[in-house]
Image 1 (cartoon, rainbow, N blue to C red):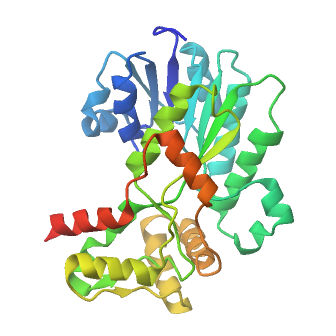
Image 2 (cartoon, rainbow, N blue to C red):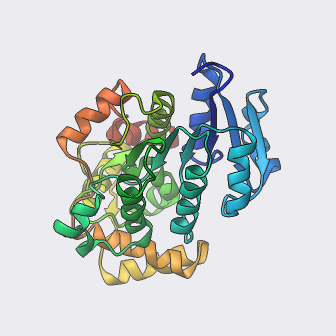
Image 3 (cartoon, rainbow, N blue to C red):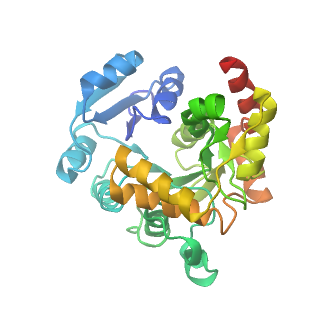
Length: 320
């Protein structure tokens, strides 16, 4: 693919992953053209001034508008799409995006952000993954991954799926609670969750976008730590880093009720409940990857993912 004909459309370009992905693309010697759909271009340009670049085209609109989204693919002759979608309309939006890609002849490759773990239909049906999975924003990814594996038109585009773990940056939300109350608020349970730095997800997205399906077509790459951390283990890490006692949130009904109420006020009651269901599942089963998944990730990224313990130590040092 030449310098002039590589056009990449990024959904969620202003998000935690997209904002770190764009600089990788701008530095790439192939100088790909980057299309950024956004509902608020003025806000995007204020937050990410580096998108004011000749390689970047900012298009204002709603990616939930399927006709508008498909017109972007056609107008800009997009050949590569990065799909990172979440929210209460995730399934409809994702499937409409896939459909628009199927109908656009220029499309050659997709990078889709899913979630860590085996989310194949086989695992869901034959290995009982759905038994403990009630959170809709995770279950939807089983359907989306299944569409790519089993429901694509013949001779369609290549694809690579990324499966990130829980964001380390979630911990930043609990700074006040950690420092003033000695309390780690996230009820991640007793089975253990893998952790990931969003910079590693962005790097993985960049690698997958530039690979164009040559090496990693029809593969899912997990991104994050091999080790999983329980709520008590995380609290102990923060206690050591901050030099004070830290208590971990329980996963009992009272704690989860309070968590749901708080999240419902910040987002919506439906989303608050869905997040609660996610954290309930962390008390039932481990959220992470296999050793084989981890080794594949290291080969893919070209490095070890950022260490969660180091993240806590560096963050605590910056707070004190």
